[in-house]
Image (cartoon, rainbow, N blue to C red):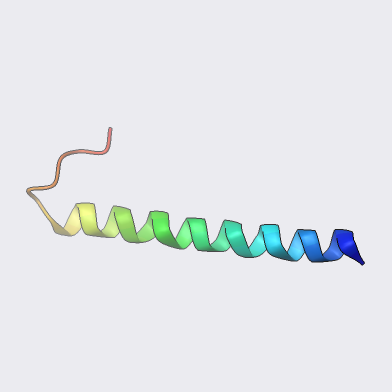
Length: 38
């Protein structure tokens, strides 16, 4: 089923993007010399 495969791929991409964002936020908080994100 193509739709099911697309949904799985989109879900995986979304999870990876959220994980990457979490790592960026954690690194920004850990490094006090990092410029603010906002």
